[in-house]
Length: 253
Image: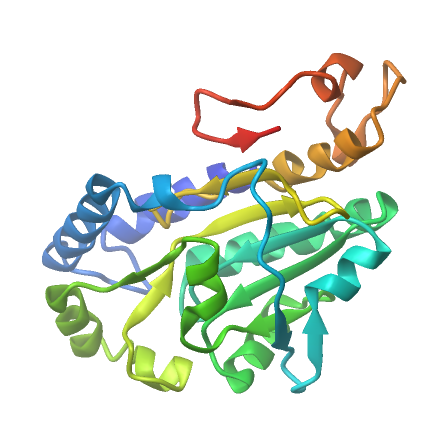
């Protein structure tokens, strides 16, 4: 089952009010309103796209060790996944899918990191709960998310809802900004240029790991006709075309 199929199945149960969440319809309505307004704002269209230069960063992992994007790119291409936090079940399912694809990323010479605004304590919880073997980095006040064009402020009515549900973002994130990143996935080449980007203001929609992994090979201009990174057959012409955008909104070059 694909990642999105799993997310869709979870969403159906969640919005139906099934246990263990038992969410009332009024809460779902508020969440739908906030998502619709974020989509209508056009914020996702302002995010960085394929062909843009990725901003460099140094962020701490859960053990407060600095992790530099520049140093990672010296070793090979880099996959970055921005997510909301350990409190988000959709994010946890995405992290698990990325973990399942981690060996494929590494076989292609790529590094993988995930970035959220949460504190180191909550990042350790993300690692522990999802059995992760790749770095989870803390982006204080979503500053790096903002540099990628992902940061947005929650509307007051959504802040009120989160507070009533005891989803206390200031506690999770260690600041009172009430901002989050739109979920985003970026593949960055060794030259720092973004090869692939997908940003979705609907937090229930996430790209498949395979969507990221296929774009590593663009730097190598493969000539093989049956190479299958991450189990997906890729034909050579896919790596020879210029920048374009798919009907799904995925940006690639």
